[in-house]
Length: 116
Length: 110
View 1: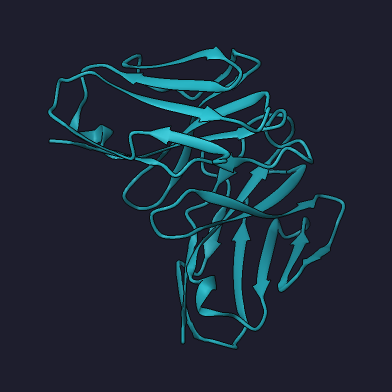
View 2: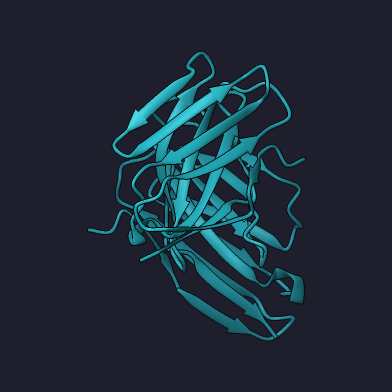
């Protein structure tokens, strides 16, 4: 009965490879997010989707492409991985748009990506 | 640009003591939220305070907001070892993104 789940939990790969991270929420939420947390614990929004529509794209390189096949899923595909992509990636969801009272965000457990 | 800045960056206290963490931000906000992150886990929402509220309580948590000083504080009373975690403030200016601070790492020693 996990609320927001991500797979895989750990991902170790070589520079230049392409990889995907999957996210699913069973909360019936309309809005989903991808965040990147760097080694200094700074958490930064990457993308936000509301009802499968992209609403936030925070100047993320084109190598990152989110895909939302339905409201319950938001996957993240990364092309041509670079050393600087190493971080923990968190998926989150909320009932509606971020920042609106009542729309607290629920986070997944994170995916630790290491690019060698 | 980054909105929230937590202070201190790290805090170590004994079980039973109170822990106070501060958050300062730069622009006007609609609301401010506090989240907790246990080591190796995702963030968990703790409490939200609206811009027209000055204080809010939830169990052992007390949050204050001073919009004139653009600052908020999170007080955890009678701390427990299980409170050991990083605490983040996040601000919102409306129905858009949340902007998180860098967090305060709290260690509660048994």
